[in-house]
Image 1 (spheres, rainbow, N blue to C red):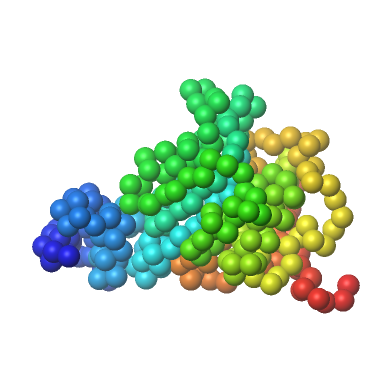
Image 2: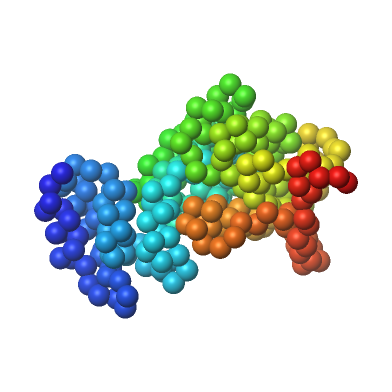
Length: 281
């Protein structure tokens, strides 16, 4: 690997407090010159005390070490609709280095009120492929693979292979059970989220821990069958899910292992402890 590209990044960087900052385009050009991926160039910069300018506003929260961890990570977002669209937006902007997106659905008219990836021009288009396009437009350093299909017991191991976290942006408990089973088998933390009307919930399910839907009886769909989904609830819960994925990947804080229940109508928020696997009721 040529050494010149590293000198190019270093010489173009300037001091900024405890670290140096380099224009992100310099990293992109250096990667092209060296025949490496843009992600690798940005990762090298972070590991050597240099922040690509696009991540400078994250430094006070994540630091260079946290940013390097994000760039070295792979995250899966399963579902690219109401929750998933906002989640991929945040993870791409944050600089999660490798992303996997999966959804077998296409955009319809009734997605326009809340799904950030949908627009009048892409009705009928694949949600997964539109997610990939959005990620590539947001951050060309993110290496993204898109699966234009629904998650099943058969394909889940291949889709999730090598991932450090999976994010649930699904709309049915049956699909969530498939995702949870695969995550348990592969030892991958799962960030869960669900929405309906003014209400939503989110939590992190670590390997071996119970999921909220394993503790209560209920149908495949939730309250959203009655309340629908307005524009604001998916964005709110998706931001919590993305936060938890970033915290897990970057090492910033403890994961949200309690169920966070959010009522946006009354602005009431509660943490509910999920009973441990095997514990007596």
